[in-house]
Image 1 (cartoon, rainbow, N blue to C red):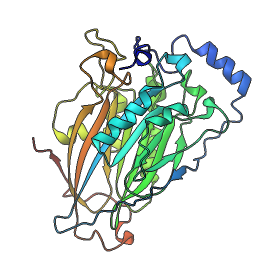
Image 2: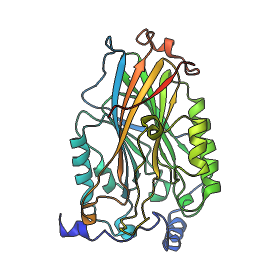
Image 3: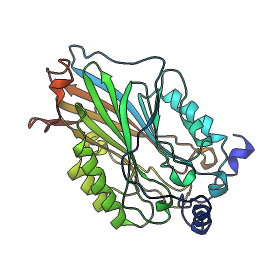
Length: 341
């Protein structure tokens, strides 16, 4: 580890958070936030040079490996973190070999170096209008073709997060012949703002249920800034679908500790939820923590990453064309399986 990387390991501060609000307000005054717009934004999509589309064989299954990671990509003057860690994040992502990568807090151009950049990757993001205060910090990378998508900004927000554009970045990917998946990369309000997060959850649920893309499922993942005991988490489970942790039957694990070694500092704030729409007879899930390190000084973010292995068991009608996958309710016989050890 280089000496420059070591300088950023200080106690966690709320990303646009404690002690920084006056500075950010000055920035807003200088650059201007313009008229607030809550309409969905189009995405910048960089397609891959190599399209990966699986075929559904007699097993009628599709396997996906997903990584969600908050990279703590604030400007260095805000968190004291070295930008040298971003290429190391990209390298570790390449080594994990996921099919999908969902990154949060990619606030700066330097932070985009955390994204794997090989020719096999398609990348989607929604760029800000003019400056940092218009960014949403979300970036999604896929080995499968990205067919389209959009960014949905939250109407509900509070300081200091309201100085930027948090929301949900949705992409539709083709995971196999005739099989589409909607992927929602999400970042909710930070801090002790339960009421605001509840309003954001309601917005998110509305967007997910309104999506009509011929998808077999919606994967909703990211940094939700709420624990499994919170009412917001329970609402997500009830109104979108079960968490992959619940599907797996495995115990939960810490995803955020603010780089603190104090007992009880760790929390589970990063989650993934699955809404099954059609043509799925069952699903298995196996999540685990990634971007861990034995020594705190070797950590690359104040969050840990979440890797999820998913296996979808598909109905016989899959492969007859997208028109056979119109949105609807999941079959009554839907089974949620715990992953094999």
